[in-house]
Length: 325
Image 1 (cartoon, rainbow, N blue to C red):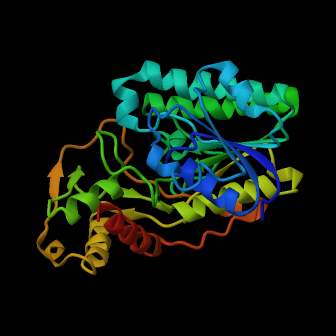
Image 2: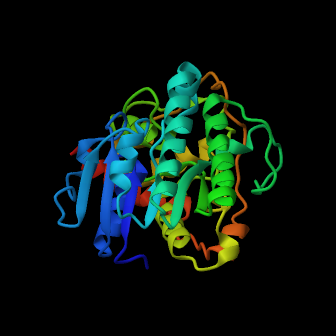
């Protein structure tokens, strides 16, 4: 267990960042939170922002001085701040680059200057690009298919250079389609699971991009929290300065996803049984299938995910049902 450390979480008002902050505050850590609320939400932090061991800083990772102010006295950084979404990056590659690459470099530089012990960062399965192999293994990647994927791969390159040049310990976690409580169901760039859940609870037909055969290794938030904690506490020196897949290790196509959601939503809304899918055009930059090998993470950081997609969906459906009430 990670406890009694001073840590920094960037993007702490976001989906993953707020869950990390909540978890580590409950474990008696001193938590510094940094966010500019461009995509993060005040409601995500309302339950703990006044915690005696929580310090919230409104700042932007694109500003090096904000990064330096947040890093003072910190032992471990969990860098979650980024502009996600493949479609967003296609629509606005410049801002995506500024946040995801320049902001990342600012945080790395501030961490290096402050002699932070370990820098754990959100990498992405988008790094695999057009590589056709399944399951995805960390050392076999293709060419990126979107500006977002380019930025996340550049993060890995910078982390590798900083670890070799300056001695800072870095660990990258390639997230695979994370879902869970506090994930924003609204907006143009909302992820598929919260969009489907909200649509179905409202009696609307969810829209699938493509034929519904696309498959993903959907990863529940508690598996991601576990991976971050394991990355922070490992004393295995072979585990640092590496990147790891963070997933469950099973793939589900979008038609199956809909069936699972229908099953769990019927507990709360009988009208869900009559909802049918709507099929729309495929999204530019999407890969057809994604499945992770998690053997490296199991071996080196003792990653042991406990939440299958079914178990995670059952929990998250209950959360969204209560969220809408």
